[in-house]
Length: 166
Image (cartoon, rainbow, N blue to C red; front, side, top):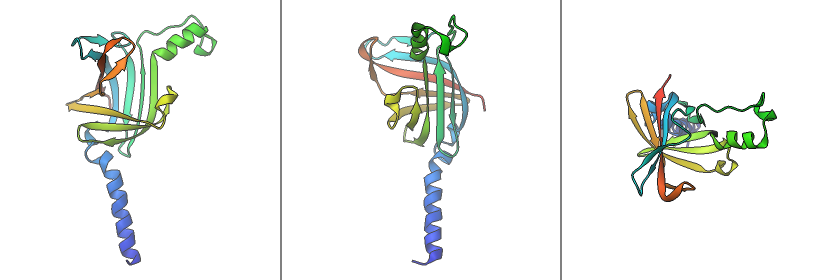
């Protein structure tokens, strides 16, 4: 194979490697603000607000295939001047009501896979987070596969609704 052919082949490989974020997932590229976060209990059909009625969060997908998410419960407060000075109980409550992670993403048939590189929960690092997406105008609904939780015996489906901010 000639040098020119190798360069063309390498260029095609690079183009194909970047195509998922620029092609199939192009509609989700941007920054999103969290509107709601609920659990659906599949055994009862009951939907429950997770972390209260007004959770806070932002999700960003770049055209280059990077993603980051930060989500907290709304209305969090502590008596101390900073989280570092808070009591261990307050610090634990802050940790239990916050998730932040970042890494890369790849589109799939029905959504995306987040490949976690850093996270507030170290058990997520190096693992894939499968997400199913539905885009309707400036609203992005993301669900995960059913999971067991400490809240009850039935599997629950996490559902996050996001609104585009840019």
